[in-house]
Image (cartoon, rainbow, N blue to C red; front, side, top):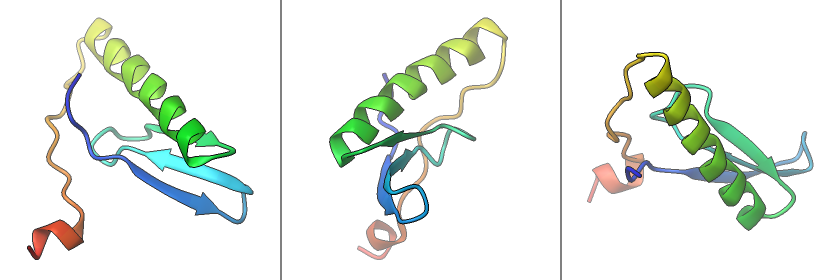
Length: 72
């Protein structure tokens, strides 16, 4: 599996953790803990990529780099 950047943050509105993968449009997941959100988004990423492959859609290469790493 490719090394996509994963954001994990707490959502007051959802009262839980959200994990998303910026390079994969609409690929996100929810968890009660950061680890649950991470595991869920990893499953979502696998499903996202498999769906794209089976439908002949473009799978973007990992390129998202958080701003903090761009300055270094």
